Length: 316
Image (cartoon, rainbow, N blue to C red; front, side, top):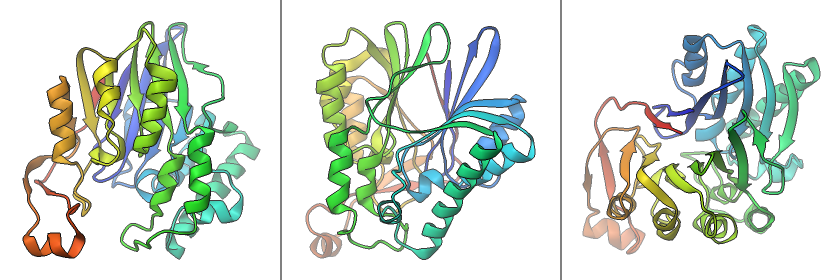
């Protein structure tokens, strides 16, 4: 199995490829808008005629903005999608609260309308709302896709915060929607890869104590949640679950949030991970005294990015 983190700037697009019954299979987790669409280009290059699954980790623009284009491409080329997984309970007010601007609400609405239409026409076989209670999905005789989150604890925490947030028109996102983020395990025998989306630190902590702490399996690679944010990092999980020669991947590009945190990268490297970023980081700038005074002591360092960047691959 190969897991490819596409370089789409500040966002996620992950392609998962494996072999089942001597047939090449592919699945997609998130698809941030890029030109050309990174997921479509990968599918075309691989000459795939079907997708085993598409996962929308949570309804933030940097994770869903290219998904509708992917679905329309599949419709145009008669590429069937066996499963579409998402975490968006489509009670209208709850879904609208995940984004801020009218433009992003319209984009998200079109995505779900397209998803429903393709389900009715048979392009999408089945739509499944994700929780940690659904059964693992076998991808082959040895490989399994398992959803570790969101659990009910995270979904419940989203509800009271869904309508009480600081509006950030630069992203169109309600940060509370990170409570809805999937946490995926791709496991083969006694090893696994962890895909964390924008999962909150509390969700990572729950997954460790409830699902991973007593497991004999080890993590050969994982995605640092929320583009390497320091507030989402839970070091104990990475320390106790790591296997031999582990790798950590950060999907990141130019941004104003201080992603990735130098503390997250330093922590992962100290624990023993080979850390790779899809964006090319050339250094960090510390905030000025005035910036600290205006934003408080939590004002993060800012990463400097050069042009380019590259895809990052993990193997299982």
